[in-house]
Length: 569
Image (cartoon, rainbow, N blue to C red; front, top):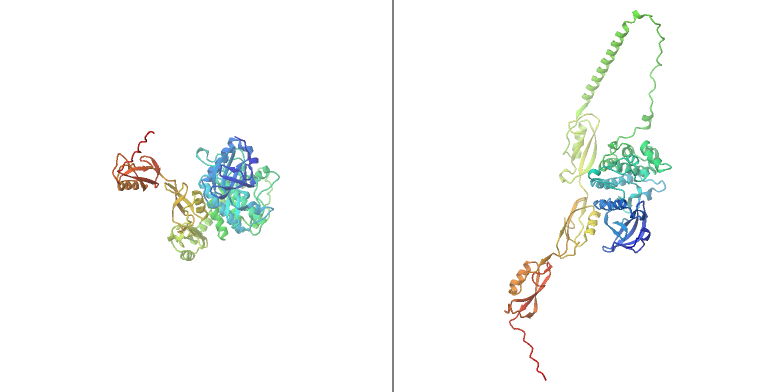
């Protein structure tokens, strides 16, 4: 076996007997990515090849394979799909979806910025991808602009799970002492080699979002160690200081994602995405906005002249005349306490008088709920949430604060209104290979459901059925089940020799075969009667594919004539 390395991976090389390498797309810390072609399916692919310095290291090979196994479990429009993995003569490779796109790093090169509205859309798409990965127990751990791709249509795809770690069993949240990732986007816990969870990806996405709207990462320095220490010790400059177009709501989302303590960040990608959508729609975000500069720097001026210093009392002077001082102090304390209690009671009474119970508007239409809440003295903001229940579309499905809560008049009540999911058409999958059908399903904005193998005359791996059927309009994100041929089923051929032709045909059809009667005849001494089966092909009790042809040869009562004897000269 030859010892090939990445340096020997050249154009026109065939890996795994199937994937033809064409050109190099880029190099990373662990691998080189090539553009290639799947010669079996005839589609472009990206082939990631483990770098030669790691090919002999069992730990790195294991991590490389883990990437393929982890990513292959993920199926989402915002994630680069993984098709296959293998080893060819010492070269370890992963075959992925080829995406004709630029990376976010290309758009941000040289301090470029992205409009806040578009930056929010990109961040929302990354949240969707992370939500899928986190739901499968996978932490990306290296979210950064080079790993976020944007197609010419504006679609966003997250790639490179090269240092993803699968959470399972006792290994949950465990991690090696080595700090992985890129310094500018490291979470504080990564920088300190501490355990990480999905909130580390939230922090890294916060760094990416910060850079998109300001043109630079939140921290920079002369060395990766210096940058990592800033992630742990320093607070970033508020984004609005660097770009006045950053609205307070978006700034609040970014700063919450960049909280040093993971408990103070968004706890999952769905929570961050919901706040990003509020910021994009101009609604009130859940994250706490930063105080205005005037409030952060305001000082309280002294309200009167400085306190005078009393001269010391000579020892023994007026001792008999100071008996009233403790009594006066007690009276002053009682007066202060009484005043405080009076003010507190007055405040509570006035607050209760101005507070009213929040009406229950769940199930109301948006307009009816808004009128009801405003009539009760509250301000109203509306959010929208996709619902699969058609009856909930246009109606309030939840509210905050909860019904019955005592709330001051003039405060805001947030209602969540159900909206219908986007409708898409189910593509025609019958006749495709399973891989091609999976790609078609995800490209249509749908999810792959149950894949059922079934014996069929069609070639193995070909889709022979689907549900819902092609052309049906369904909700975006719905599942599509497919039936895939496992090839023709092998069954035993019935032995019909010496049976009548009619009975033989019936038995063969019942067993799943296609009987054909030959025009030739044959004498069979065991059944010389006309109209019987003298022979069959394939023979009885042999194995053949269900649905295949069995040829029947009719019997004849005329035995073959023996050739006349030859006479000697």
